Image 1 (cartoon, rainbow, N blue to C red):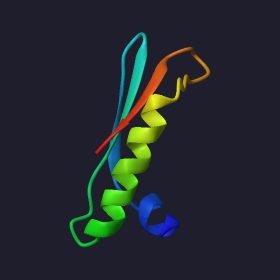
Image 2: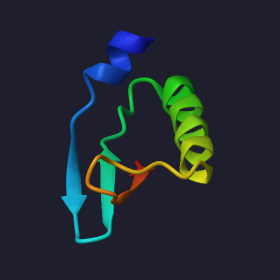
Image 3: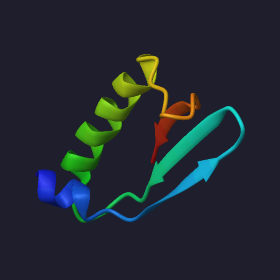
Length: 60
């Protein structure tokens, strides 16, 4: 499961106050993508900041 997540492509969008990490969905693994999306939603409720003080947000 973890290997599948680390193999996902994605992009990071950075502004002065926010960093958005957008992962690409893998349509071949819909159950895993559903679980990952739920986990990312939970992570987004936590006040995560990078070392430069930007709020970090995850999406798919």
